[in-house]
Image (tube, rainbow, N blue to C red):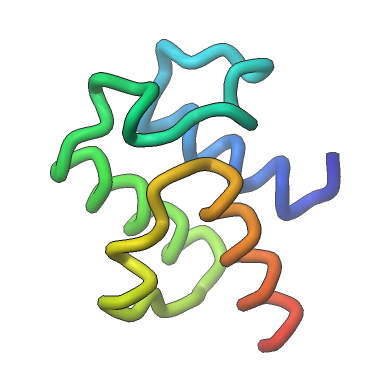
Length: 80
């Protein structure tokens, strides 16, 4: 796991402490009942703060899984 993945995982586990690290790659809004609108805002705020990136409205709506969030962060960090 690279540094970005580790940091994304830490953000997820801060918002969803009940998740085991091995479950993170499969985590999504559909698979985590606690992932409601408040948790979504909290998670993406944590990601934004951790990486110093802006998350636009379109991305905000589509970042609905661990893998999508991790890919988004990778692209933002690599492009920034």
